[in-house]
Each structure stands twice: as structure tokens, then as C-alpha cells.
Amino acid sequence: MDVTTRVVGDFKIIEVKENTDGAINRRTISPLDDTSAESDEIKALVAEHHTDSVKNAYLTAISRTQI
Image 1 (cartoon, rainbow, N blue to C red):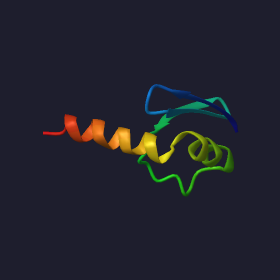
Image 2: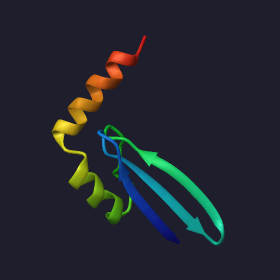
Image 3: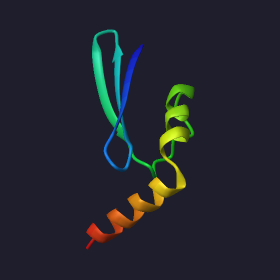
Image 4: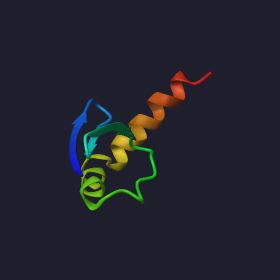
């Protein structure tokens, strides 16, 4: 499996592109997602970018947009 990642935006959303035998799967990981089942590569990105300050800012932003 070939995995490509990038970190985007103020909330450090992790974009993951997985290529397995020609099938491409894309997904995102936000600061509040459970990443316990992720690969070590993804966990390292989460540890680096999803800091407490990023998580708190993300939580504040999404709480303002909910009805």
C-alpha cells in the first residue's frame, strides 16, 4: 500500500490518500478523531500537529457552527 499525506488549514486537518492495488481511498483526520487504530506514520503526524491548542480551537469553531 502506498500512502500519501498532507496537513492543511488552521486546524491541521490530515488528508490521507491510500493506493492499494490500483484502488485509491481518500479520507481526512480532524483534531478530535480517534486515531488509536492508525499506522505509526499517521500517529506521528497527529502527535506533531494536533496539539491541545489546535484541538481547543477546532472544538470552539465547530461548536459555533452547530445548531
